[in-house]
Amino acid sequence: MIEVAGLRHCFGRREVLRDLTFSLEKGGFAFLTGPSGAGKSTLLRILHGSLPLQEGRAVAAGHDLAALRLSKLHQLRRDVAMVFQDFKILPERSVADNVALPLVVRGTPAARIERRVRSALTALRLTELANRPCAELAGGEQQRVAIARAVVAGPRLMLADEPTGNLDWDLSLRLLDILRQFSAHGTAILMATHNQALVAAAPDARIIRLERAAPDAATVPDAAAGPEEAP
Amino acid sequence: MTARLILSGLADLFRRPSMSLSVILGVFATVFLCGLLALAQVGLDGALAKGQGVLRFQVYWKPGVDAALTARQMDWMRALPGVIEAKAFSPEAAMAVMRGSLGGAAEPLLPGAVNPLPYTLLLGFAPPEHDDAFARQTLERLTAVDGVAEVRYNPAAIDAARSLGLLGSQAVLPLGAILALLVGLVVGNTVRLTLLRRREEFEIMRLVGAAESVIALPLVAGAAAMGFVGAGLAATALAFLWSAVAGQLAAAPLWLSLAAPPGWLWFALIAAPTAVSALAGVAAAMESRP
Image 1: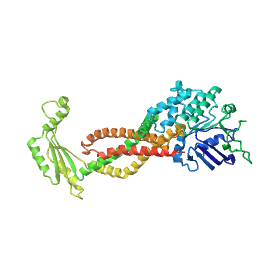
Image 2: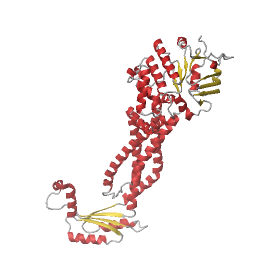
Image 3: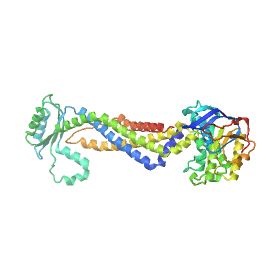
Image 4: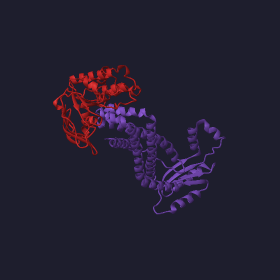
């Protein structure tokens, strides 16, 4: 579902990712860990088509990012959903409208949208907030809306950038459980997190650890070999 | 899917009514001005083509003149060289027309048994070419007839109409282009403003898999709708204005009988701004692409 080989990315003269190689199979679940500035968000944005592939090879949900044209970007994003650190929800629209957005832009029939939105809201315990404008929600609730939106269309690959950052421990575990269920149904999930306790709560999950690139050397391990211990 | 996107673009207009209204008013004003010019041009062309070379005199006799003598004088005038049309009104006929128009309200204006209205005769001449004196000589001959109170004629009106027609034909294309540009700018800038205000929304739509057409189509539909409504209102206002002005121009002293504007002109007045607006929407939506 994800194949990355020799990936390198720079912002100006600063190298953020160097010679990164890993893969994640269909239905796989992996944590993406590492200190701030190690390139976790950069990697997710590359895989989501928000940053160009500068060097190396990357395939996400069957889309070769090196060959991806701007006009086909929406096709990648229909297969690869992303949960953003800053949620990226529409504050003036209702919870249900936000969750329905990926289905609306695909032209999904209204009855199917309603059914799937209801299911996603139930899974994220948002049913009672369905008609509330997102601007009125707390941070944790907004994050759950963002997650519900990511899962509603049944993506092949889900990228999550610190999805539990605004959630309490119980909700974090609940979210992890939901994501593991999605993973079990065939959606590959790559979840960036700082939360080492959460990583420890899923001992069978793969861990892809990135290190902050030193000016003269990068310490990006090949995580394809299997799970690592959380530090 | 396409129909749903178009409907969503139309629904967006109602979410920002003040902005939509200002665009519609902008389109209305520009199309109204453009249409006014086009209608004036078409009307004058028609009037000039219809009355080209025709010199018209309206002869008024003094009230109370001898009817038999006046009838003979009218026959003489009809037989003048160059006469191609003649229409006479006796006082009785004029009174009947007035009563038909005013009904009972005419009675207080027409007191007593004596009909105050004069005999009149409208004469149309085809003047000989290169004979500038013809109009003056004909006027003198008609004025000299015994019992004639006044003679009006129209060379000044024809000259004015010809001048206006020339001015219009020279100005219509550049002005039309400028006004089309104005429509494009008004609508295009509004769509750009909409894009600016909804930039975050469109960005999120792209992030969840929206194709560019999904973002552009509602914008284009909304832009076209604003152009259509503005142009439609302008065409309606022009139609009312036309019917009011045409009646005024058909009377003395202009005698400009305006033919109804052709259907294609009304179609163009609505279709062109709608198309320009839609194109402005397309251009603005293209600019917003990442």
